[in-house]
Length: 94
Length: 292
Image 1 (cartoon, chains in turn green, red):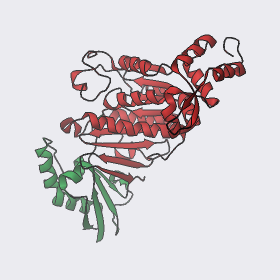
Image 2: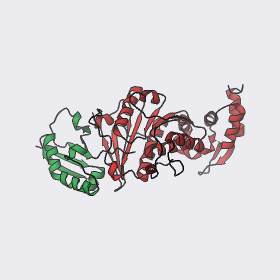
Image 3: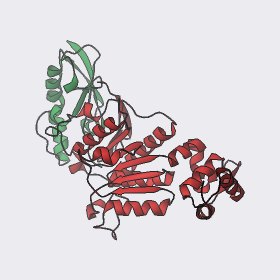
């Protein structure tokens, strides 16, 4: 079981009221389940208050990087002690 | 040779027209005014931009750039005047980028947009006015640039950038600036820039926050964050609900221009292989290092 750091940025930090948290997980899948269990409902509530209805789990509407690498580009699913998960909203406007 | 004058004669003519100005730091600087520039350009059959470059090469500063020189130097201003920047999209981000690049003295601006100004643009698109609603953005932008800095060449493409035309529209650019409002087009621009070997400054906004990334062809970029398949890439994000307010567009556009100026002049360090996340609501700026 690896202790990893989760860092929230931008609007997600503002909505959750924290900039980081720790999780213990063996792999990314476990970490994402915990991430949504711990923070998903609070984030969705805040988003709903702002008029944004998003379906699914945090990973469905966030950009998530492990040590700066997008999850879909990871070569391994395994986590190691000290890994950092970066979680932030996409911003697409201009 | 212009009007049968040699470069030496042109330089002498410009030097003779220069006047001494006392800069804010008390130092004497040789300058030429707009009026002098125009007169020289007219009499020697040169463009205003050629006069400006020739003057700068002799250490004579076009008065309009006096407040640039301390930051980017004479060489930086020359490089800027000799450069071409393509701005894809002339909306919230794009119009502010165009305005700032014109004031900075960017020699050639390529502006690409197929849209017309609408009322919902008035909050942030600085070239939109109540009078020009319904007019094409590129037309208004080109006119605005000409009024700000007539030395600048503008190439306006009144068309939407697509996978098919991207390389053709961007091929003359030294840097490409993001003025877009959707992800699929940004991924098309990024791919075209990689193929052309041109740096691309990505930027986007939502509410009080924005993102910025300078992507050189070999760098980690947007395609590392998003699946480049348009089937799985969201066209738009939370900004459709939380909005695109004017100050956020201006703030992120200004950061984009800083990146462009640094790339062209070689001054400073760019936000490469990183994504800059700016949150003005709580005023926090983060940089995340990106890897493949």
